[in-house]
Image (cartoon, rainbow, N blue to C red; front, top):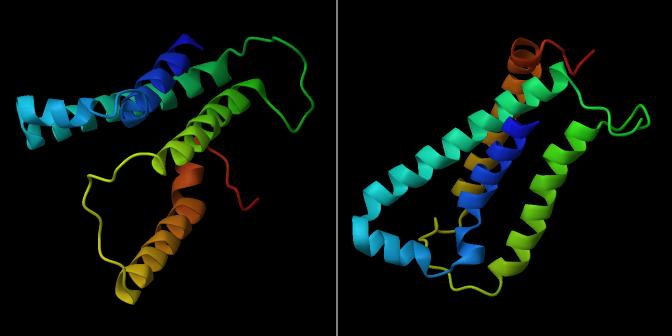
Length: 141
């Protein structure tokens, strides 16, 4: 469980820099440059994600019984996805309050179509092939 919590703290922590310290990113880029900052950010994010996945795997192998939940709810799953949900809600609320300094892709039908097609392709790949190989269970039954 500790590995899962450390992974969540790393992953959500690095993604919450704009929430906790809005000027930190710009100061870090000024100090070290954009590419090293992006590399460090990506490395910490990737390390956190790997720890979340590995910690989730470990937690499922030797669960700590804190209470007996109903069959449709598991503690580790609630911790994992509840943490992401809480962070997403806080991040979404704070997004409206901070200035946008990250360049975005211009809006257009081509970009919308590209996002939908790639999203559906990744979804189909994950549901049809990757889920059973990664987790040993087919979501299709």
